[in-house]
Each structure stands twice: as structure tokens, then as C-alpha cells.
Length: 179
Ligand SMILES: [Zn+2]
Image (cartoon, rainbow, N blue to C red; front, side, top):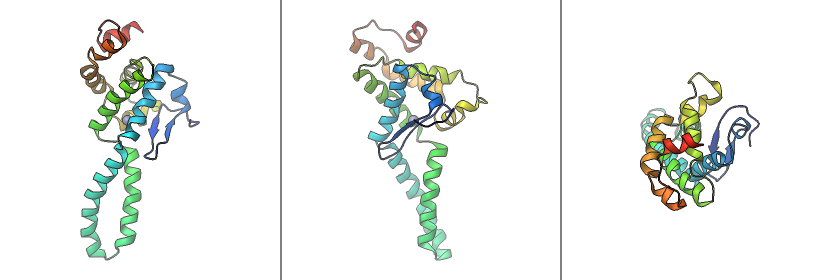
């Protein structure tokens, strides 16, 4: 846990997951489980490594041309790898990987015995966060809009999770109103 007032969670490719104190202070147990499951999915599905690979390939092709001109291959490439790493955390992952982390995360949290509606509840909170609220700046900047993530989850969750838990079928929106 990072001693930071912002509302953020990150995963590093090696399996480390970081959450800020500002986040932990604002969520309940099911919501935290949903967030951790989302981040764990980024690690187990190797989303960061894939993104680094894609951008490295695209970048290095450009770099190869540049280095032929400058004849300074080693230095240029290592500097570019550093820049790629920074870029990844500033810009975030592919949208499809974020939607995947939401879907798989909800299933993971549910299988671990937590309320599957924890993550949707966090997204609902994010949806109503104003863009100028500095607490949420990084989270909002590095992820697809919360409304889109909720719609994707609604499509994926439908009535299947409720069937799993033996509860009557309700939509994500209905369920969140009940909380
Ligand atoms: Zn994510």
C-alpha cells in the first residue's frame, strides 16, 4: 500500500500490485477485492508485457531507421526502452485489456467468495467523479471511461453471475441501487 491520498491501483509485470491509501480508505471489502482482482488479471494475462512488446516493436522499427542515420544503436535503444516503460504507466494499457481485466476480475473475486458487484460499484463511483477531481486524475486518464466499462461488464455479467450465486437475476444497475 502506497502512502498517497490519490485513488489509484497499479500492477507491475512481476506480480506486484500497488494500491494507494486514498483508495483503501474509500472502498469496502468487496470493492477492494474487485480492484485487486482487476490488477491481478493484468499480471496473470501479461497485459503489460504484451503492451511493452507491441510498442517496442513499433518503436524499434522507427528507431532502426533513426540509428542508421545516427549510428548510435546501443544508447538510442536503451533510452527508448526506458521511455516505453514510462509511457505505459502514463498512457495505460489497451482498452480491450482493461475490459478483459474487468470481466476476469469480477469472476475471480466471485470465485474467491466476494460479492461480484464490488468492481461495478467502484466503476459507478468513478463515473460520477468529476474530471477535475485530482484524486481520480490518474485512474481516469489510464482507463477507458467508467460508463463504457460498466456497459461492457453488464454485457459480460448479464445473468450468469447471479446464476452462479443462486440469487435471482438482476442487472448491474438494479443490483447497485440495492447496495
Ligand atoms: Zn486496469
